[in-house]
Length: 321
Image (cartoon, rainbow, N blue to C red; front, side, top):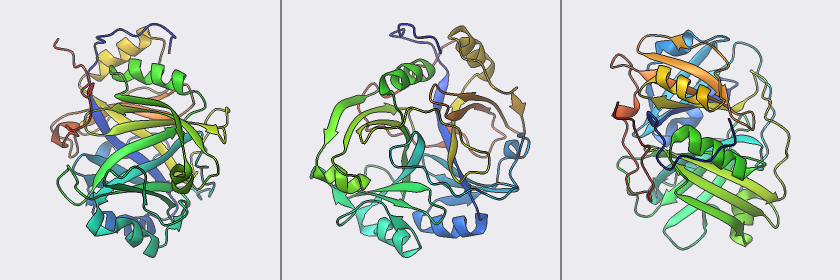
């Protein structure tokens, strides 16, 4: 995407984050492992079956504010866990009431801790405790346990996290893509509690957070130890977080808008029952899709609950055409 000044009032039809995709080696085992989260299994959308290199099987798990897709590849999967420092889509975050002890449930179900000390860890005395761990395939996830959740229901998908070697470049790209600035940026995150959460020593991080309406995109650039500068280059059968999907109101219009900013779709638009999509890569090499749904689709951002309590600028600017 062109390195051009950002329009303070960009025109976009972005609605929110539809889902994140996690490649797994065994769909039944993964479904059983993630069952304690309380995410609700729903019928797989027909659009997924129509994609090139479609998986042998997939399971869509729905939270009140978005979805996690578990996808099993048709070929043998490659166990190559992504380091905490990336680069790439490092994890998805589950928010749950503290009394549910979700982290302990997932550890009891076979997760391996990444965080050290006594996770979940209280970072700032704000009633939220944090922990990283890896599922049986080695894919990392985060649990945030809240004393007083602002959401309704047993679980929310709080954010999708990406580690980048150049957070300034990532922020510029996603500001143009989403039509909204980060609601928070921090250039120096340090301290022993962050060492415990990440399982690293003397960690130093730069970070940015985008509120995309129903979910957050979180970006971390590790300064110490440094996020590798090589491009993300995942194999199609590698376990871990593979991509995420952003829902838009007008896919054709978005394709034209992004073309004008120097970003072209890698594949032709794929149409299925109730949904169509186009596939892209960001400057780090991460795959994402833009999707458009109709009322025939079982899962739509219009049916998800927003995270209305997040700081402004919270809402994407939707065209009134």
